[in-house]
Amino acid sequence: MAFDQKQLRLVMRQWSTGVSVVSTLLNGKKHGMTVSSFTSVSIDPQIVVVSLMKISRTHDFVIEAGFFGITILSDTQKFISEIFAGQVAESENRFDGINTFEIKSGSPLIFGGLAFMDCAVIDVIEFQSNSLIFGEVLAAEVGETGKPLLYYNQHYHKLQE
Image 1 (cartoon, rainbow, N blue to C red):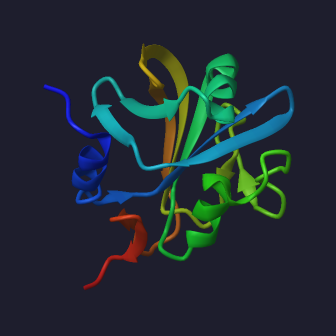
Image 2: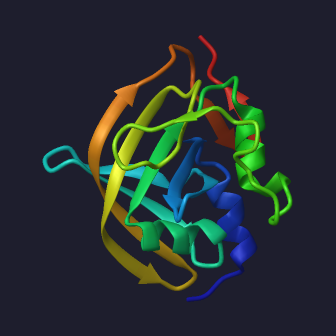
């Protein structure tokens, strides 16, 4: 039984998520985008999955590079989330002025994040307009102390005590 997509969007807005940036390096160029659809699949083996829209410019870069990084953003990094969510024109480099580092694969990770993962693409399942990209975690580090940036009902929020 089909129903209006707007109803599903309204329902999904009631689900709060953390905010992260998925990034990769391909042919010497950094690429990345904000995602909230990311989760741990397994601790043994160490597998995560991220859902990327096929039309996003980062989608093809991650698959072609074969590696991706994940930076879990802190509540002080709202501006970074906005940049990587497309508030910068597509022709511009989203990494301009952003301090990054690498752990293992060369995928750029963003300083100031709460945590970081460096992953190798191990499987891609295409479904409709998105792909589920499974990554084996090659390395993981805890970053700055702080609180996570949260996204709920189309707005950013901070975790309260």
